[in-house]
Length: 196
Image (cartoon, rainbow, N blue to C red; front, top):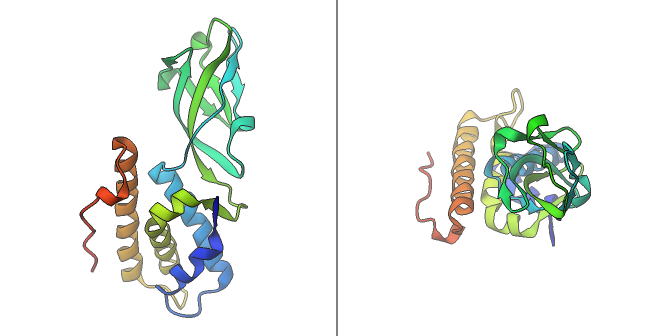
């Protein structure tokens, strides 16, 4: 299920002075969703297993990606159930997984390549997965408010508001990363940032 960006507009607008153009709100929310997904790494996708071809260095991941998403980093790469070190592989433009010349898999196997990636929503998309938005809505709203309040020479520019919501955003990112690393959830968090 998807959570439309338009649902964020009232949540962001209420935290800023009146007069923020709707186009600016929409763009800030889209960018905030991408920024939060990228920095927190909350949107992970385990791609469908890929057949390994002996000595092939490049594998296209595009067909296995979630709709309306783009890869920002590789999280894990396993070839025949063995973790492939970061130094031996990279993500090239066009969602191409590239193995270094001396480290390409040497044996063919059916479904032997398993890849987990960190993705962000495409900028042209109009929604995020509901699970991300329900848990991490505060971080996304904070990023949008911080971005708009930090825009120079606008009636809604306010450095204090920018700093306040940037702190909340960074806190929410750290909590999301902690939850990802430990398998915990947001309900286990007991501390809120000091807001001035």
